Length: 286
Image 1 (tube, rainbow, N blue to C red):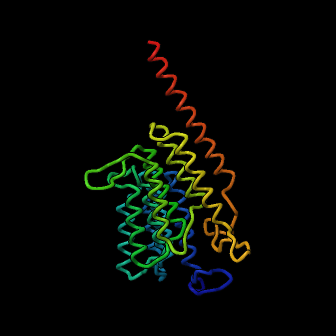
Image 2: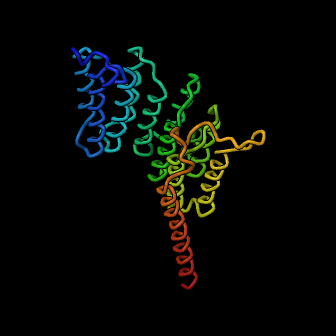
Image 3: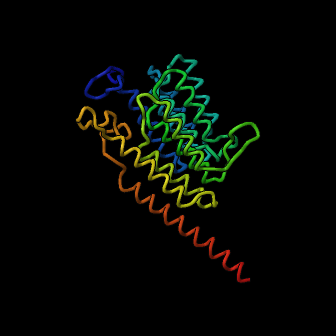
């Protein structure tokens, strides 16, 4: 009984027993990545919560969606499962928040290009719901959409742009996602994880001769735009941008992993170009 009571030292969410169950869902999420758990295991946790008189809340269902995303990577869950969870939330009168919609997009990232009919544009549809509800999306939601596009591009799946129009153009996908961020107010800038996704998209395009070094340079251009936005002169005074990099205390730029990944992209561009030239030289000699 004591575990059902709120205590500020042990549970900022409001219920220690609920938090314990949500941690258990996180464990299932991790185990699911290695094929050691199923969606049934996660559902048992929810059922046991209810049995002990602890009703799942928004945070519980958000974590459950992340568990579905993890399981979907190994084919143990699907977009249909995530949609069913959202429907259940609505039926129980639980109002989703930015965290919930971001977790829903995490499922899209796992399923895009892997589950029939699911593409990153399903994430865009979720984003549209967020905008229509008047909710300001966070950067993590865009990170998942970009990741969905990257996973889809790596799997060689084209993007549906209109009925009957399917185009494989990862760079176009990335630029479209960046434009979606322009609708956020106050203005949101792409953080390191979003740009990491952009790099992965260009890598996939380079492997299929759909991009090259110029598209790689475009990523640095976007990074420069972000850097230029960090501060400005106002009334003769230098003003630092009021928001954060990735909604965290400002790091004033991406970490070393970003640049390592970018250098891998540049190397890939040159390797593919060299093989292309070598192939055509051999054909010319023959």
